[in-house]
Amino acid sequence: MANKCAICGAEINLFQTQKLADKNCICRKTCRKKGFKTFDYVHADLYGVKAHLAQVDRGTKLWNYYFVPRIKTKDKTQKLKRFGSPVYVAEDLGLMAYIQNDYKFMIFGKTTRACVYRIADLRAYNYEERIENNSGDSKPQKKSFVRMAFINTEGMSEISVEMSNIKAFQKLQKYFDTLFGVQKTLGNASNIWKAQAAAIKSAAAGVSAAIRGDTDASEKVGDAIESLDAAIYGDRTELIRRADEALAAFNGYSDS
Image (cartoon, rainbow, N blue to C red; front, side):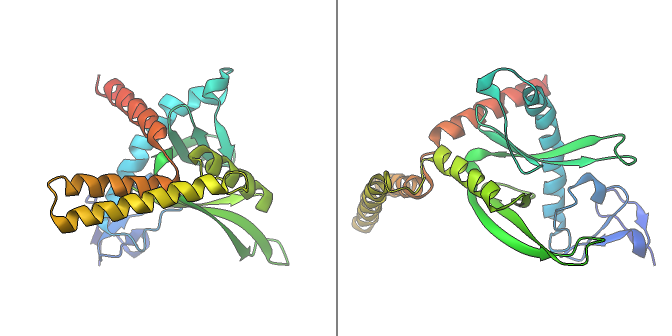
């Protein structure tokens, strides 16, 4: 019995079908291939898949518009940071890209697609180790990965990136910790503690205002949450500004 792709409407047999978590089906030949190989289709619903395909379509355009010209630029202010094979960071734009390269045959016919995220939306970057069996290897190999999670993101909001070793992860960790201003060293531990203590005090004041029924209670609570968030994750205001400007400029270009 044939199924119908919930995205393009094509009739598909069992082998051509990718089932989703909500019992919908999409075609493997066309629609599934528009997304990333690492996207979890099995546990995604139709809304999530459509969001991911839109994410890839827009992300690839952003990659070609902003990132490709920066790969070989001599302008030091526009130099990309690269982590592992697929992660590129454009600090001057407040954006980062996770890419997938595809080839028509062997190493020929290369195409690149991308998911682009705001750096400020990166909430976690945690080290993981996995034991994997590589084809042709008699012994299982221990591999290093970083799992990166993003907020405010529809589609693929979590990615796992293979690192060469734990030192490569530590380099990535140090970069983002420094960028966000949350590096945990003896030299700044006191400053971090003071910021967190002040944020907690502000949050308590916001809650008290809400209990009293102050007219500006909601504003105080909102400010308190932002203060606590910055104390834990670092002040990302400048990164947000850069990303918003870059995305607004891109929207203006793509709409013209």
